[in-house]
Image (cartoon, rainbow, N blue to C red; front, side):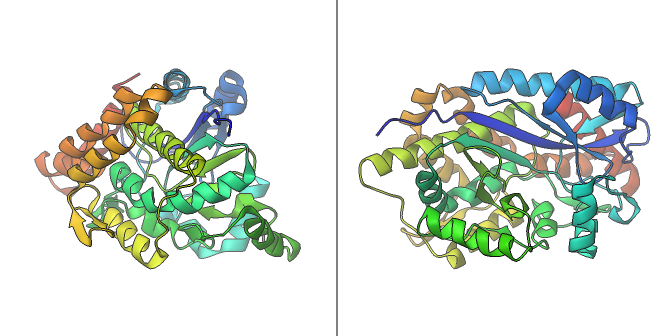
Length: 372
């Protein structure tokens, strides 16, 4: 079996904030026009007017992805600065109120607002998506079913949304709680093959419930636009290098599962009841508590899980040229995800609760720009 290219594509959503007040700000038309002129098809508005989305080109390797993502992040920052604004890459703004936000006047978003009612109004959240190139549809269905086991691991490492409307939620990823209110979200169904997936999607499209599979927002899905498997469970990362670590981890997991498939082997399929428990633990604790190893029937500390993953994926990281990016997962566990870092800044800041939240936003601004 010919080895797939395992190309990479990364999409990120950012929030725009006022440099002085740290409050959310709507993207001026001139800002979007400047970004579109410079970045062409790699930037677009998002559902809310305070959001902006970028996407890399299909990248042959992690090094190319770094160059393109750095260019995109820098361009958004540079153009936002002309209007006294700056992007932050966190999945929730620490103190903004969703009730004061307006959605973008675009047909797709107008339809979402009409169809989804009050739940979509709360979507003041940002995520990151990693596409891995897999042109064989049956393989996409097969790998999606197996890769679901690792989705909680990716969520735990990515958590960046502990605060919501000025309060500590107690969760490492509050974004997941908000997003799960939408239909067609959560862990992907365990389709036995590609035909089952297509038949299920076709039922909804034939009924006019959805226009196409782009209205399916599972934690992982076959992309509707590209020949890729798209991982969507992750919070967006303030630090560019952490984005690349999560992308490398996703890419290596796909290659590892492909290797098993070539050898007529596969990762064990567990019921969503069990995987969902790990998903909750990741959402609640990030990397500060372990996940359940179902084979061993015990909760394993996350540092140990990372070491197991690094050993499991070492051959794939070598083949894909992303060893240093992959091993940075150790740093994320040791230093804490963005959720932990935000809480540390909040705790160390002086002043009242409002001042502490402003310190968190400034921290997020600084982290966005540290690798540019």
